[in-house]
Amino acid sequence: MSDSVRENVRRYYAERARTSSSCCEPVVTSCCEPSVVSCCGPEALYPADLLTGLPEEALLSLGCGNPLVGADLKPGETVLDLGSGGGLDCFLAVRQVGPTGRVIGVDMTPEMVERATTAARQLGLSNVEFRLGYLEDLPVEDESVDVVISNCVINLSPDKPRVFREMFRVLKPGGRVSIADMVSKGPLPQSLRESPEAWNACIGGALEMEEYVHALEEAGFTEVEIRTVNTPPLSTLPEGTVFSALITARKP
Ligand SMILES: C[S@@+](CC[C@H](N)C(=O)[O-])C[C@H]1O[C@@H](n2cnc3c(N)ncnc32)[C@H](O)[C@@H]1O
Image (cartoon, rainbow, N blue to C red; front, side, top):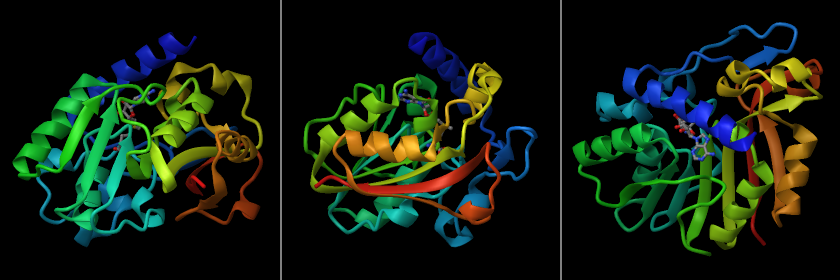
């Protein structure tokens, strides 16, 4: 199952890297109504002034939030972006960590890594690099990262506990996590779980909120918090809703 899920996801995102279009996937959707409710794309997810000065090549956004909101990046820090896609969050992060900081993006789709590397070159950035690899087996040294960020990727992994263990391994003690991801409130129907289209659209693989918290804690993280951003308050969302969440945590 896992290899075929990843292969399907890779094929889908290779095409997205080639066609340049930002996503128009659901930000909030209910299982009885799996239609597009709200569009994303960089303008919907980030303040306009953050995007100025970036080349067209860098403006591919397939995310579902802005993970930098919970990251509190400081000059000189090392940031790791899981599933970096076209690199947009890395280009925004490097502005915050400055010339003494460093940003590494990891993605399993060669077309994405190539696209992000080209954009980094256009921007003249020497402290941002993109590595080809899996979230489940990160090509990153132990305890070498201050902050892990990710934007709408972990839901796509067929082995999320392993991704969380890898995040824990590469973070320095005291390191932080800030993830934008699709999360479900309550169970989803099996038909959505098994639909490749729903999986690629970041819905089918969404963890339930409680599972997300539990799996991060199992991996060793503390201070785990999940909140909604730009969506109605959690208490008002019906059961079976997949929503865009901001997840923060810390390695003790
Ligand atoms: C929805 S896109 C998000 C891209 C980027 N974070 C953004 O906000 O535009 C998901 C990305 O994650 C990558 N990806 C999905 N599953 C992965 C895995 N298991 N390991 C590494 N990369 C993965 C895909 O290749 C794709 O580039």
